[in-house]
Image 1 (tube, rainbow, N blue to C red):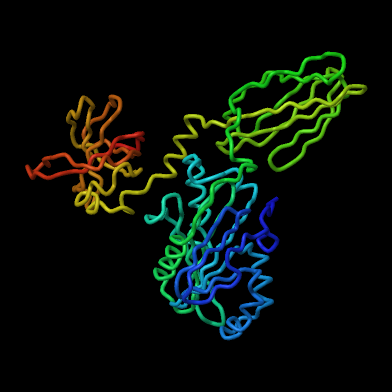
Image 2: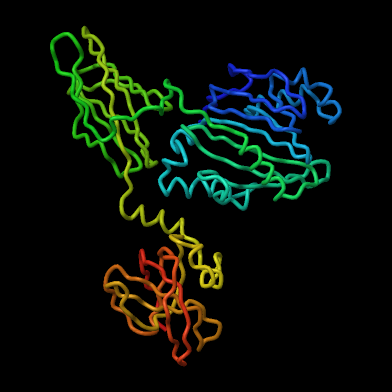
Length: 427
């Protein structure tokens, strides 16, 4: 179940300015949410706390003040900016089990990055892509019909310390690209504050370390882990403890509390979800009859198997068609290290920097013609013959290599460093 950890209308705000008139520059800080906004000339900056002062402005816009107040509360709005071009840009922040697991765009595993993009690239969202203007931020968009009019909504999203921050720009009749530009303008005026010292993510954990057991001294409740590894590659992991028989056990996770008792052998096992590639923390509190309670903190890291890593990589790869063969040939340096996949017919070999290099033709416009050659650097020797069909997953190297086709025509073909080669069929 999603847990709403941030309620902006209850935040303790450090109000550097209580009212902001158009034409004046001022700043507003939200320390509990880690955000500061520097208002620019011509902007109207609103928060849930300034709606009374902005009653006349809102009335001119035909906006009901109380409806807006309720909307701010429900949507977890930190602030909203009315721009001179008619755009309305609001910043929301939300914390859920999912965002806590993702933690931040900087710490995301490739699997999480793919899932994050996919989450904002399906109905009602679309055109999700990482922003070129801001590192670690995702652009997305959607449209809604209001009063028979189609309104665009541009999104700019990022994750920091388990919080999802979203800038949403909207405006009736305003082109989508202009709405994206409005988000960028507000983002340029926004500062993310450093994590607070009391933040759950402000320090490092002891993930990967087996905790020292609590020994039986006749006073405290002993605790030790049985067959425990601090690293798992499973989606679900069972942690088994050993203590005294009939002891009460409480396990605190990031999002839940589990309860149980040890059996007659003094053992109790708890199965926890470890689906995401992050570091998990669990606090075991065990209290046996006539003993003092003991606590043991357990850290567990989820690693991906090689098969899972390969699956994630393939999900992240784009098709050759989506990038465009012509674009890659004309500007190979613009596509360095981009994951890509394509199918092609083997046409020849060469040697490049000590590695075998396979020439594949990737387009088949007619049954007897193959075009659009790509050189594929192989990490290992692969048995192939001319005409074999293979699907390649790899990364564009950002350069080209000369080739000569069967008719003696010369040209330059892009180079891809192969990650995996999948057999399809033979003609």
